[in-house]
Image (cartoon, rainbow, N blue to C red; front, side, top):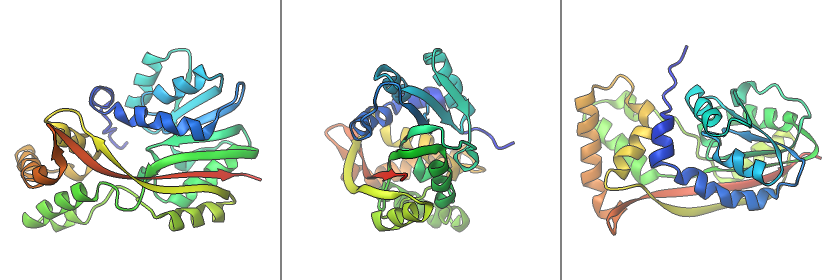
Length: 253
């Protein structure tokens, strides 16, 4: 079984901004009382709780058992399940599927969209935000450069994310059956927590790139990245990640 690399405690203490920034997405979702809503990639459950407070009948799913266990501990009254988007298995069950900061982890993206489409009832809606083209490129380029400098070319060519353009993703949505009614690509420079913000971000979100890398090599690489990016990404005492996001709404008609 593949190791669960998600550190739910680190996520909640140092990266709670992911959920906080996702609250704006709820305005696009416009949840109504009694609607059955799937929170896809719910993490530790904060936005699922918000949906519940707004009157929705919410089901939260995440591939990470660590995240789901944390969600169940925080919000014991809600329904959370360990489930992979690529093996969703729902049919015509939800008025809406909601997803924040998740779909850039899912490959192949088309299969995820087909499964989301099947999970929705007729006239259901899919509302999502995730990393778009150019997301955290300053950071990921720096990581790749360090691997290349050390002759670790295989590591440099690994890329765990999927950051599409609007045109690319809208086309995939249409192929899955959706009518795309909204698509937006925007910059959102995102403050990271504290002086170790960049280091914590890399450990949290780019950790898979360092599988099988010795700790001293990993620390050497991260320190070099911090030194090289300080002039561009460290401002007023905090790190600022160069986030670029996509927001989409698709209808199942």
